[in-house]
Image (cartoon, rainbow, N blue to C red):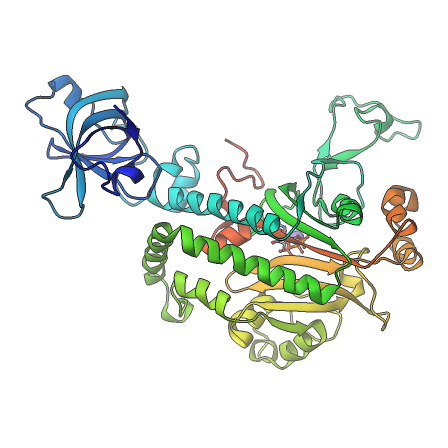
Length: 477
Ligand code: ATP
Ligand code: MN
């Protein structure tokens, strides 16, 4: 007998045939109806047990959470709520589940409660939907780049350069933490460490990706990145996945076009391939928003919001224009912002980004040409000597989703900036080499994968869109 997934059976193609299906019991009611789920779809298949034919002992084990193997006939369902069901002829309990202690009961659990049960929460509709969408998005990302001539590059997770400058790093070391070897002046002697130098977990694969773009032309990385940010926000993880394309002979405008086309393409993919899950998540969001005051509810449903992104051009606004808008804005004048924007040069906080996106433009926004002093050393200096060709993409409800730039390709200018920031040139020798041998205009960006998943699923906390989140004080699983 052939084994089918629930998803396959629900299509009804095996009508009146003998089928076998494995899964976990979501509910068992009236000693007769099993709602069976196997993760292949959001939906359950109803399996009807004839209790007179089923041993008492087996019936007792048909509890929520138990794993079972069912053989029977696929028939049209008489009851409402489903088109097809399985008339059970044989049922084997593969793994029992104690109803007294199984935490995932068939009722609504809070997301906070489920975070404590990260190993089991994916057995709920919400988390299984999120994780299926996450998987589809990740596939769409690879497909987009493949279709557009990019090579997938695996940049190192352990990095020896501490000049990436994107945030606090996690040290990688095999030295004895209690009793490390010391240098003459009493500092930890990293020459004795595994790699003979200080090493950390990477905060970005960009610098290495640049080296590869300068030979393969169009490359991207998609891997885990680590930041020891003690920020505890709903948008920051200590371990997250980042997508970083890097393209030779591409300028900032081309970079914006790429980012916009890329984001739209992957959103289109999930709209086409994850309909059921998105509709479920849309309902979930609607329920959640009912608990909020009217003015905090979003005007669009989840799927409308995704279409809105597809159907509209991202607004491209220079940093300088954005500052003018913010200075004139109501929350700035009424001192409602926590950080009041007084002058050009201020770093934008997420409250400002969200004002621009959600109140002023009401659309995704690409901010570009930022002041050099608030951006990284590798960004291309503009002719004004004050701003760099940086771009951030800001999304409603999320804030920054992409950070990117045209890279400084001129050796002399790059050296000046490195020196100005007090970074020793030796640390970047290989990166500088890229400007000595066949340098060219090139650009790239980093997109935080979980922030994209947040946007697409309508979830609000980044801890709920990655299987086992790592945040300060939390690495249980
Ligand atoms: P933010 O200002 O939000 O902290 P950033 O300026 O530090 O972001 P970049 O260094 O430009 O971010 O990183 C590129 C992208 O990676 C960001 O646009 C964001 O989508 C994502 N990102 C950055 N830090 C985190 C984090 N701690 N957790 C999850 N995603 C992150
Ligand atoms: Mn940051």
